[in-house]
Image (cartoon, rainbow over all chains, first blue to last red; front, side, top):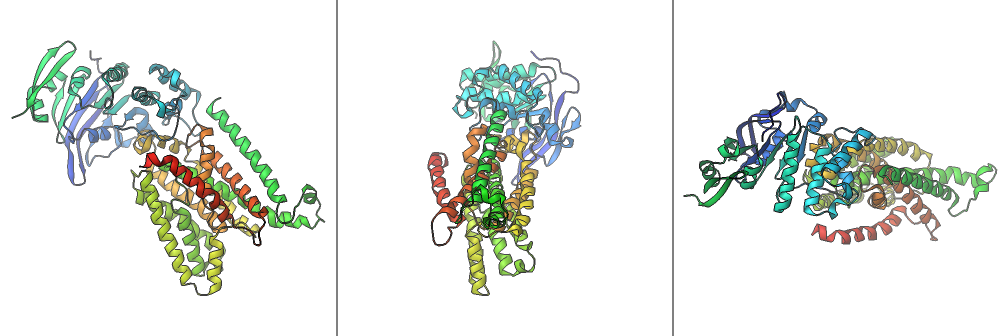
Length: 265
Length: 328
């Protein structure tokens, strides 16, 4: 299931520490993400998942520690270079104005395009992204008129059009029904299957994390308490510490199944 | 038809409209000056056309473009269709700067001091607006920031009026505040037009960043946009363009609000592609309004600022009603 990691194509966090309004949100988090893998970051509300993702995407400067991309510090890259390498899907993506799908997807080319608008190469990348997400027919539809699933695909196509090496997504499955969740999971897995590309996402749903991810990080109160393949990371002991629940983990067809028994203790 | 082709057609159409209105503006007024009077230097109307109406017409084009583009840039940055230099208090801050220079007598020592103070006031207005609304400001927060700035600026103007050293100074301030293009000369053209051109050129560099801001601040930063640079460019560009406009014409409201709305659907709602068409639509609007003002039969000429407010007020109201559900 896991593609062999390509040497150098890594994103790593080294001892990240972040405080927000006097409260420490991340305490010295270190982790390495490899291309070819889908990594899920799970944890209870307020554990610091979104903050970790924002640091990895270069959107927030950690108070201490650093993020490196392919061995070089992320902070040393220009905004544009960083945006070419890392595509970011925010938790509640805003789309202002009544733009159509093609325009939205074209915005993904921002780090590549010049002052004079989209080049031929930019247009081809947009066309590929629309085709890949099956949105060609909806290209001229207004984004606001799309259904939740279509909108999710359009936002994903926006990231694809930028041709980044990394896709960092904050709760990309929130608000989707099970069918659309599986479609989104397929798109993420397809992205990570491309040479030199990797996905890091935060997730609320443990069942999906167990099924979809190659690797799971469990974050509690700004500290990593587990890091590994789902079977090793999502153990009853870890779940008890993370969520205060008693859980049973059984072997399912496509990965471990987590059954919540009740509140811990 | 592709977006870019439609944009070029739109720009061509607007240029044509401006050319027609420009000609009409030279012809119309209390004295009708047909084409034949333009070419005959001996005709007494020749002086009216080239010494009175030409500066006024050139200024109408320039300040219309300045207000239209400033409005479009502010709407793009704030993702707020109600943003405009007037509504968000930038024009009032420019007026406060200009009034202070009149009050302190600076404006009489050197002609460039009044526009310099107006530009300073406008730039400060943008900075305060951004600071008040914060980085996550929604539509309502920006409007409230505008209410505060407008209130503070008009209090400052009122203070200067009540403390005016003589009735003549107070009269001067009031008359200038009302906003007009009447009796503007080549002096004012020389003062304002180069500044406005610089301001517009600065704002045009924001095209790509404003497009990216369609995805919100986080989305734009993730696409490599340097938000702090965008804020500085916006403050400097809007400051120079709308400050210079206010300095020579006083307060002419609502042009920056209306112009972007007229052309937005025609450019596929892209905030960056909207800038140039919005500047041209602003020019056409001010030209048309200034012609109407001159042709309206009245004892004294109606003020241009009053005319744009008479159209802009109801327009603002209609916008507000159509947005009510979103704002609630």
